[in-house]
Structure formats: structure tokens, C-alpha cells
Image (tube, rainbow, N blue to C red; front, top):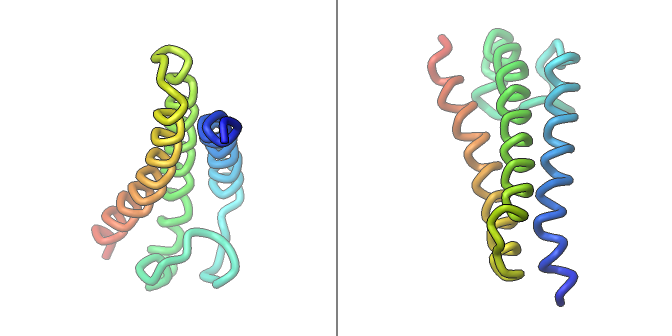
Length: 114
């Protein structure tokens, strides 16, 4: 059980690195055409090619920012001494909140595009 508590913050660090790498790849090589296989695929992003192109670039930037935020939170554990249960709670809540916020930010921006 003790290992689970330690893994929560390490997991947040690892996922932060993955978000940064994947966001960078999607920014550098965004999918050119609307597809159902990869990229930022939501109903609003697939409404038009203009929205699709914007969503790919913008969501990759937001994903990289979210990844950096996860890294900062994982390093903050060493500055602020939290207990094992606190680490688990912080790790899980940061992941859930970060992923939801990422989608909300991109969808809100997509609504502004004609």
C-alpha cells in the first residue's frame, strides 16, 4: 500500500513528460485532414477544416502547458512536505482537473471560431 502513495507523484511527473512530448509532436506534425484516428477529435473540432486546423495547434499548446504544470506540481511535493495520502490525493486530483480543464479551454476557444 505504501508503494501506491509514492507512485502517485511519480506518475504525475511521468504523465507531465508524456504530455509535453506528445503535445510537441502534435504541434510540429499536426494531422492535416479531419480524421477519426488521431489528433484533437471532438464534434466541434471536426465541424470544418478551419476549426480542425486551429484545434490541432491550439490543443497541442494547451497540452504542453498542462504537462509543465504537472511537472511543477510533482516537484512542489519536495518543497511542501505532504503526507503519503496527500501525495495520492494531489496526484489524482491534478490529473483529473488538468485533463478536464484542457478540454474545456480548447472547446471554449473553438466556439469563438466561425
